[in-house]
Image 1: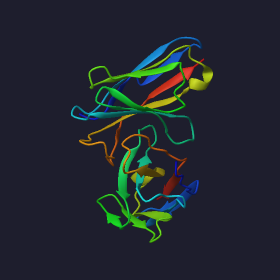
Image 2 (image 1 turned 180 degrees about the horizontal axis):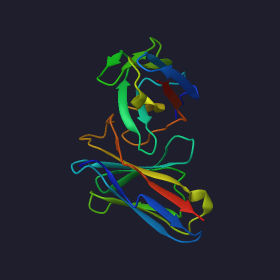
Image 3 (image 1 turned 90 degrees about the vertical axis):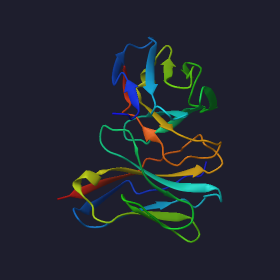
Length: 117
Length: 111
């Protein structure tokens, strides 16, 4: 399967702990996106990378959240000092864009479900 | 961000056409209309997009109003596998980044 993969698929942690999620995009895709989705709502944009550069961050991405894509391939999303309100599905998506313009189709991974106790 | 408005839920019978409406009265000239769907326990999946003209692909058709303030996703023959949450999203053609999803329409398909 050459789609977007995310690891782990499920994570249960205690409040105050740090967690890190990994996303592996489709191999030739240079754009990578992180979203958060809570139950019954649509995905909320968190951040976007073009290659290794983080070009856009949502105001939802508080100081406790950090995302990296060091070599322009896989990406990690870290949440420090987790809170119960961080419980959600964290989705990663990728696309291939050769210019700065929009690419219409994003390919989403299956998500990582985080539960903070 | 320009926002979209969709009904919370719709029902359809299997093998019948389904018309899923979306209102986007504040759409700007560079906004493209996108539709994604999300099956249970999966990430969203691209369905179709358009700018001004109606569009067809293997999954669906997209009908766009002349003033672009509304659009309709058409599934020509609904199957049980089409049961999902359908999201109508506006994305700026000059911005490769942010997508703003609403809460979508939950489509139930009855056998």
